[in-house]
Length: 516
Image (cartoon, rainbow, N blue to C red):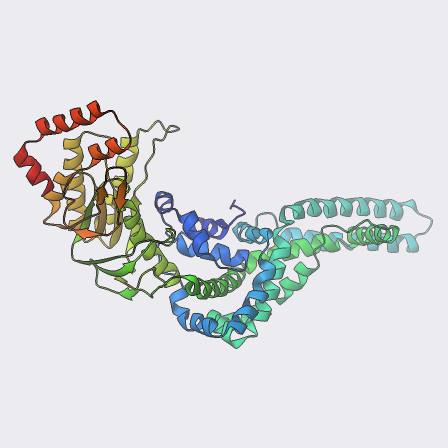
C-alpha cells in the first residue's frame, strides 16, 4: 500500500520500479519536507506528488529538458494562467490516492471472472422468457428468483469492493479528462512527445467507463429515492454496475503504463509551471552548469529556507572541504546549502546562487543528524557508525557528494580524530566530493593535504555573540567555548577553572600549533 499524501507517487515509483531514492536519513538531514513546502508552487495534487518525487529521487529529472516551456510560461502569463486553471480541478486531497490504483496488482479481477458476470447477466432474462413460455410451471419463476438473488449477491459484492476506490476513481476519471484538454494544446503536448498524442484515444473507452461509476445518490426527495431503487433493480438484473467495475479495473491493469504516462505528463506540466512561478519570487537564481568531477564553483550560494541568508562563494578543484568553527557559526547550514542546491539543480534545473557549477550526476548522501534508536537498542555512536558505513559503501566507486557534520561525537577525542581522518581520507581517495565540519582543529591539521580548509567564526563581545556567517579560508583562529559559557552566566569560578585546565592540558607551543 502507498500513502495518501504528497509521498504517494514517490513510494509507488521506488517500490514498484526500483528507482534510487534519497536515503530517508538524508531527507531528514536536509529538512526535505520544509524544503518541499518552500519550493512548492504547484496547482494540483498530481503536480505536488511529481515535485516531491523529483526532489527525493537521486537522479536528474525531466525538467531540464523542457527549459524552453518554462521560459514560455514565464513570458506568457496568460498561457500560464490557462494551464493553472486547467489542472486546478486536480487540487483535491483525493487525487493523492491515484498511485494507489497503479500499485494494485490486479488480483481482484480476472477475465475469467468477467466472463462469469457476462454469463450471469442474461440468466434473469432467460428465466423471464421461460415464465412466458411456460406460464403454468413454477420452475421458471423459481429460477428467476434464484438468478436475481445470485445477481444481487454479485452486485453488492462488487459495490462493496468499489468503496475501496471511493476517492481514487473519480480523480482518475478527472485526470484523463484534463489530459485530453491539455494534449489539444500543441505547446503542452510537446512535453509528452508524439506518444502522448495517442494516449487519449487509447484510454477513451476507460474514460467512458469510469464516467459511469456511481457511489450513491441523494435521497432528498421521493423522486430521487424512486430513481435510485429503479437504477439498483436494473443494475442487479443485468449486472450493469458490476460489469462496468470489473471491466474498468481489468482495463486499468492492462493500461497501467499508459495511465502512468498521463500522470507524469500532467504532473510534469504542473511542475514546469511551478518552477516558472518559483523563479519569479526568488531574490536571484541560476541554472546549474556542468563542471568536471571533483570540482565545484558557487557564487552567492544561499539556503532557500533561511530568511535574509548570507550568501557565500566557494571554488573547489580536485579537493574536498573541511570546515571548522564553533556552534551556531553556520557550518551545518552551509553544508546543507550545498546539498539542497545539488538537489534543486537535479530536480528543478534551478539553483539558489548567482552561479553554481558542479557535476550534477553525483549521488548525494549525508550524515548530519543522528539520534539513538531506542526501538532497536542502538546507541548514538553505533547508529552513526552504521550510517557512515553506508556512506563508505555508496562512495566506493566515487561520484558522490557526501555531507558530514561533526562525526563520532559519541566517543573520546583521540579515537574520534583518528576515525574521522581515516574515513575522510578514504572517501576522498575514491573520487568523492566531501563537505565535512568539525570542532577538532587537530583533524584539520591531519587533513590539510587532501582537503581545502575553511572556517566560520564569530565575535564574542561583553554581552553577546556576533556572527557574520561568512565562509573564510583557513582554520578558525581560536576556541571560544569558555567565553560563551561566560555569556550564558556560568559562575566565574567555573570559567577560571576551565581556562586553567586548558592551560595545563595544552602547552603554549601546542596551543599555537592547535590554533594557527
